[in-house]
Length: 82
Image (cartoon, rainbow, N blue to C red; front, side, top):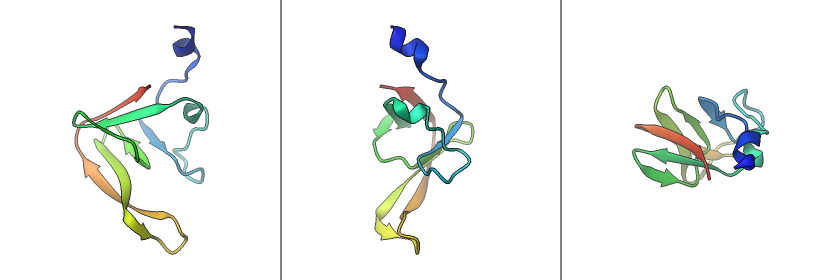
């Protein structure tokens, strides 16, 4: 129970890319789970709860900088600590 008191609150929008303004290293020190329409996703690159979308990699496609191409899925988003 003490572990939950030390966890930072989950933000409305979060990205795994350190160059993004929505990146938060303190959150990634803990295991974060994301659900979209009650289905859990393990490969989420970015999410926004208030706007209702997540971005996941689109297959093996890469952009010109070598980062995975992301596709946006819309629905009811839930973020939680595992």
